[in-house]
Image (cartoon, rainbow, N blue to C red; front, side, top):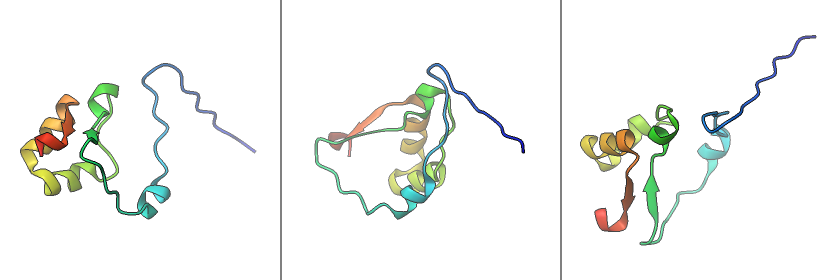
Length: 79
């Protein structure tokens, strides 16, 4: 029997997300005070979970690209 041990240390390790849980989550409704952030740029990762496909269709290509590349926070006032 063989095994692979993956050990993460420091601020730049990502083990992935629970895709099954994300797919079955209910539709999210947020308050006006909610802030949205794509933190991928801050941690050196590329957007996943369909963000690069779905977000541009929801908020426009230029706005989505700006959020993905800069790590800027989107607020209700920016709407």
